[in-house]
Length: 403
Image 1 (tube, one colour):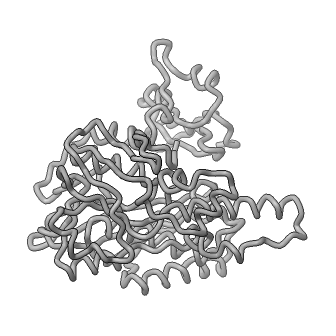
Image 2 (spheres, rainbow, N blue to C red):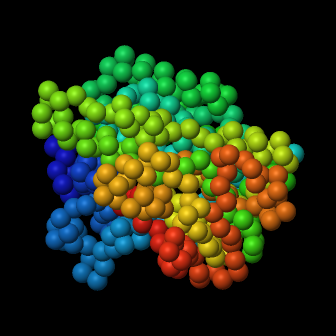
Image 3 (cartoon, one colour):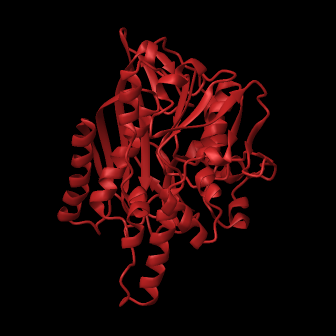
């Protein structure tokens, strides 16, 4: 085939079909696309990499406008894909658009979700230990099942490995995976392993279940429901800033040792987050079913807007009610970042954001790890935060951007 160059096409003969191998660069990495000759014109239309646009345009028909995926963003892309598909089976209760798909199996619902992590995009092995990476890859999938008020049971792992990784390195990765499986009582039941030309790739599909009447979607919030969030927010983002800073210091002077002891809690929140299954079990013990729920992976603001959009409601939260750890607060100031901004837009906290009926407030009001930050209302176009000074601030999603 020859060497893979940006937007280079080489011809290959298979049994009866001529194919073109089209290579394009996405996020700094080259990927091959195999297109039959008959669909080459379609392939030309959908180059999506961060390529030289002048080069890409030469492969487009004169009347074909090139649209960057970044113009839509991750969620716009998901909506676009979703609009072209409809559920065909009565057992498919919920498809694209929630933390997990919901499948009717009779007496219960099966929950299925998947998350992919790519080296250089979602993690940096310069400071991410392989054991921690394995644990985190499982935990963030468990968090999706928690967000549906379900119980995780099985995982399937797809793994892409480059020749940089030894058998011992793979053992370390699976050591972390095994620890998470034991902690969350999840079984590893299969998967697929392949070679990778672009570093380490981990894709996990998780399977869980929930009682029909206790399955929680993003779409159930009602007017006057109370907005709740678990734990504290912004710590994982600040842990990432610390790790990136220490990496830069080390690169400038390899004799310098990382200064992480003071920031152990924040770094831990980034490297080894925990899914809040404890909250799911506690709610079940109190016989409380949230009206809507989502896990906080992209930041409080983004997830709050998801709940409002899916529930056809607006939201009002109060800045002084947002839980921020004292160390996170001080570290944000150290980095000259507004602490509230880290909570709203930092992401990777994997806490639970949920709404409850006002009648369920009493049993939870003294819970040390559930914080009541506002309420939903019936103006779908109004999502606001009341600042500590009493100013009304529109809530905007400015968290992690995938494209």
